Image (cartoon, rainbow over all chains, first blue to last red; front, side):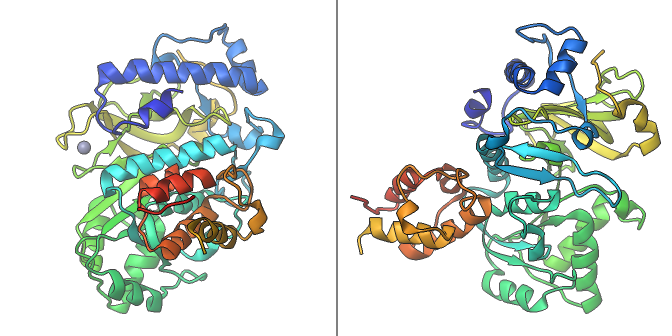
Length: 360
Length: 80
Ligand SMILES: [Zn+2]
């Protein structure tokens, strides 16, 4: 399998000419696999007239599904007995959550890919880890929420895990202080979801007048800026506050979807999100669905070589963004680098979201 | 206690299953008791039992009981 080979190597050293053929081969393998094992997916490929061996000639031609399909349909390419775990998107009240069906192989590939990516940023030793959430989020082990799955995945990078919040989202000061006393001068890892880190951790510390000191700390956070923009908090404000209150330098956001867990796009020192060797990003123009050029804003399509137990290897998101370049980021990492600029309004996205999309 | 006995005991405690179920073939994610949550508990218990520090490679490579012996052997532990 292509992904298994790629995982032997580094996440950010494949230049475009090397990466595209490998990625294409991996996506074609997945197209064929899902066509054979998922009825809904094969209906799609049949509908657009793709025939065996389901090979496309370029990554841009890879068929893609929209995210709401995972709410409407039970999309899986494995038998019921092989379902090892089901992930649920958090889904606001009244909305049906996405359901992602995992078998043991795909679950293992998710962990492995995530660890390979994060090793690049954190090194191989596990770090004392402060989880900026409460322990209740991973209570139901058979049916994780997106939040629980994210925390569980990143936990592999940590040791001596400590939850910074109580169940009611208030600061667990006793635990935080104990963690600081034990690990202040070690390279620690802190992880949480952007909005919650801001409101329940950073703002709460400020209110209490507490400054922590983790000179070798690394704050990793994931999630969109939408809710924070409403409070006029942007990435640089977030970073400055975190650096000041936690006494650390490294603050990195990452972007990813519950439908493609393991496949994450980490923000570099320049503030750019980077595609690892195992995944890629395309930008499409809403309406025409044509692939846009570097610098043009449109809807993000994410491809990943991980999803085998469900047909989620090529997905059109509801997020707007633009590609800034490929293999040329000043940080030196190879691969495309991009920005997420917001979310498309639900009404605008509806036109395309209730049905399959056919690449043009 | 031999290292093998210690290992089996540690697995049984961490996964909260009967020690008789701990065979070389037992694989990660093959039973609901050995999922990613239990895996982190297992790693912490193995570190405590054998007084070692496992890195992130060890954690993702530890896909079965047999693999765990191979990995622990890197830390000068012998399993006969
Ligand atoms: Zn960069």
